[in-house]
Length: 135
Image 1 (cartoon, helix red, strand yellow):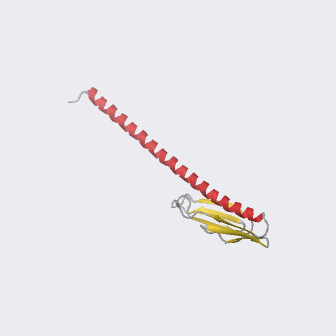
Image 2: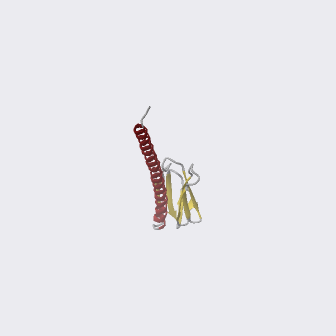
Image 3: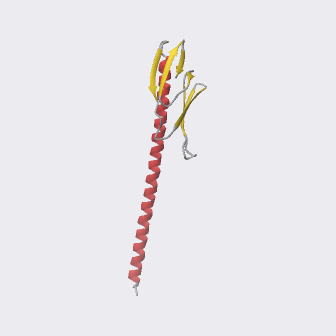
């Protein structure tokens, strides 16, 4: 039969092991949450950069003389995800549809009045008769 001293030692070791496992589980969960947060931040920055690139191309075309023409390329995916773009009412909207409905990344930036549409590939922006056209 186990003595009282051995029983208490087994209980203490069990409590210590359980506590260590609990702390490790908490650290792993926190690490996963931080990783997800970093990924979402990276995704946001990439979308914002894409919107800023488009905004800059439109701004440049508006500040030059008629006859301006330039090609620029937009990525096919952002963070290995499909994204969408829309030009409406002098606003450029870029967004990623997320599998998590609680987290959808949307960027909206003002742009000058333009005609045309954007595509995920090579776009051509031109200025003629003071009108800016894309594609």
